[in-house]
Length: 204
Image 1 (cartoon, rainbow, N blue to C red):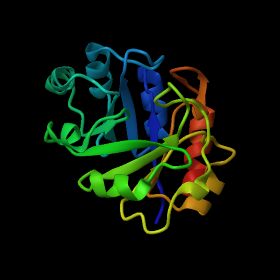
Image 2 (cartoon, rainbow, N blue to C red):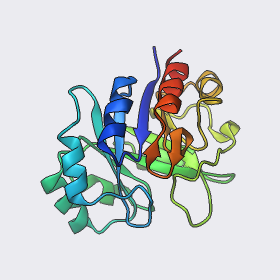
Image 3 (spheres, rainbow, N blue to C red):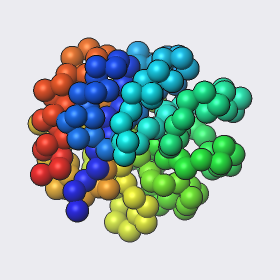
Image 4 (cartoon, rainbow, N blue to C red):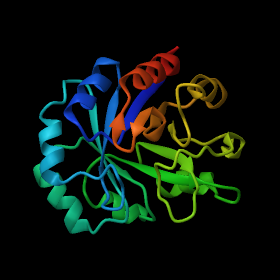
């Protein structure tokens, strides 16, 4: 079964169309003020109006106030939520939407406990741990830290790019891969050639 591909940090209409044309399964939209890929609610709503059918929209939040998440959801028809901070299972569940829980992986992180605690998450998104930065770092973690018997779908992230995504898929065999900085020419600006190469090699 072909791996799914999520391209995160979409900020421009032209990038959205290029990414969809290249065969992405999901697009990530960032609602985190400290990120260079952060969107206003108005920008995100305009982008989602351009989204073609059968491409999933994912909204990324980091320790957001619940009221802010609800305000976004009132205006932006996100299909899936991605929580990339220190959110509890109870926090993630309160919005009544399907969600992904991101885990920043480093030695000592108990992924089996995460899988148990977030048993209703659609998947665990595994990213690299970089102190003080919740994601989008371009850093890769040691894939050997992923335990056998992790009974949740895995979305592999962290330091992926067109040159290593095939190795990542073969080694980890994730449900999906997620990339942001690895297919950019500048923060928030996607490189169409890198995107196409990444998706092609991931799905091979």
